[in-house]
Image 1 (cartoon, one colour):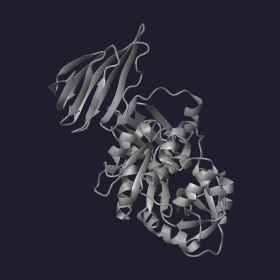
Image 2 (cartoon, rainbow, N blue to C red; image 1 turned 30 degrees about the vertical axis):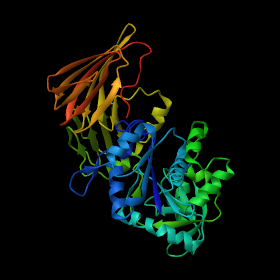
Image 3 (cartoon, rainbow, N blue to C red; image 1 turned 90 degrees about the vertical axis):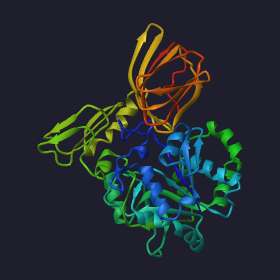
Length: 441
């Protein structure tokens, strides 16, 4: 069986920590077995390895998150970049066709598609190796994984199973997409399950579906058409139209941690970062990425979240409204971003006539580098704040350590490599029409 993990998302529900460049699955906030913290994607990788599935994993990430996905998975798994965001069905097909065209998967092989951003117990992943046998014994064309709801929720889709199924699986009767709370209660009375977004099927099933849609089975040809494809979800495109689908029931812990309320419930401490909680602050959490203290006094049941992107203070149960707010109001360009080499934070930007001056801080991981590139701006200056490494300008390499200053002119080829953890301040002067990106992946 081949396991394709889909990563990405708009990153709005956990703003200001998550965003277009840093999805929620990269946030290193969850308690780890070694006593430290880990990201959601790191936790999933660890659990897949424990279930014996790590040898067959392929990640499909959006092109902008290719390097960061490789970084957070420890470069232990193959990762391919989706050229455009076109929904879970298109991303799943992109990954499956990659395996097929490369000769790594045959039509009779089982493909399992799952989201990379989920929080589940170990028993959840131990169900995955059973999928091929269940598909064979049930004669189903599609298998879904559902979990027993912990409470009525309007944030998840539901799968309604037929009654009287086997211990291992049941036939799927219908689906309900994010119902209101009253309807969710009715669905739970019908023994409905939360839809975990996990699907398993034979590759031949997907190939036949693509053929009926008039889409190619060759990965390169599929990629050529990608930009013009509509956004399609696997649920609506495939699952809801399948007449031979079964669902496997999971009775343990599962969540997509898609809100500050659900994420806060998984944190080891009510305080992450600088600051403090004082007085009656039951069920209040602070997550502070800034280097200034954030204090909450006598306010229970809220989240106070601070990052370079902004500050959010909200009742835990109401924090999901931030997604609607961000959709209704224009969002500024990200002030914080992560890449394969480290991260950057925009400190200041100032316009001076036709010129724009950006000041930012770059943090490079040890033995990582910002690859050689042409300077597409009027000027750029790097000042080394800490750490040591090497800066190369037009082929000339020089040792770089705290206090060092390097000036780069338009057209200069330049790069920096960190030996130890490095911190740099960059001042960039741009003219109208210059490359507006801060840094890519």
